[in-house]
Image 1 (cartoon, rainbow, N blue to C red):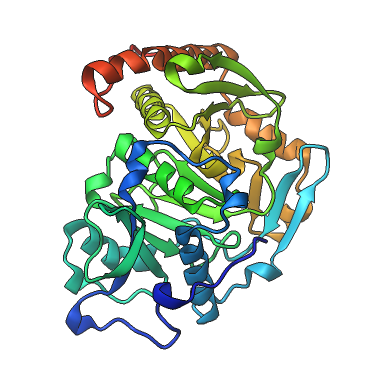
Image 2: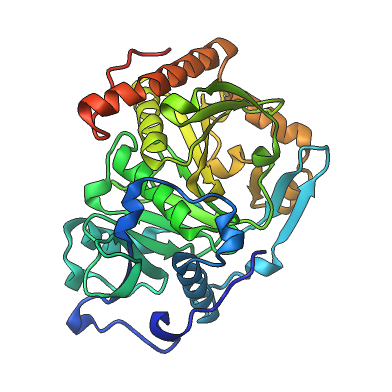
Length: 385
């Protein structure tokens, strides 16, 4: 469990008795990044200790607490059963028989309004926390808004949260691509992770997964301790920081093959990840992302479908956090069973080697590409499979 700081004064949000006045349209609070965030430099992990809670961090936790306190949840996350599964890898198991990863059906009307930007047709949704978008001023701002951000996202509290502060981050229609995340979407997620500036905050994404038709949605959550994959050993496969300002590593002795991208430069990190995402999609390869360390570290989990179930693991599971909906499954969870599940979707050695070579090539060509075309143009990379 992470600690929360209540936001008072000029940034206090809706009280428990407030409601949306439908005659005036939807009223949401909009957080806007400061213009200086465009310098593309991400905060280091040390900032969260030295500088204290950031504004966005306090807003998210305060609103999430207010949402839960209002009684909108009929599930108490503090009472759920949680355990570390023995065996040395410290996989986490949670019993949550109400959790449903596809529990956003009630927000269909809201998403329709968000897509076409007709706020007056939106219905009141208690789980809607705030909107996030890029700003133009010298400091971050939060203010009431009569309409959703046309180029940002909505933050919605999960009706049945996995853990404390579990939220859905829903990009607007202009940020949506039906096939893969582009530079804009990855950049938005990384900015949020950096702006929250809390080492407990993680962002997750699963390619090809849509809980609402036509929307690519990512999630975030607060975890007091590192996820198992974050504690795994890594081996550096690319370290030419002077040229491309990025380090690429691979996990060692982890059941699911994964690559780790580390950089304090937002433009570099986002450009590399968007190119890799494009290549993975182009080769019909599923993948998941875990963004941590205030946006400076991204885990990439490429996957094949399990031959028995025909499914892939979620980003939560790739990181070593498994939610069980039955007492039997929870009680019988073991490191061997989880390792086998991970291994069943892991890439073959030769395919993973090809992917590593592609990542290094993308990083090597990054500086030249940015100088020639700018950060919004894709490099012409050949298929890697």
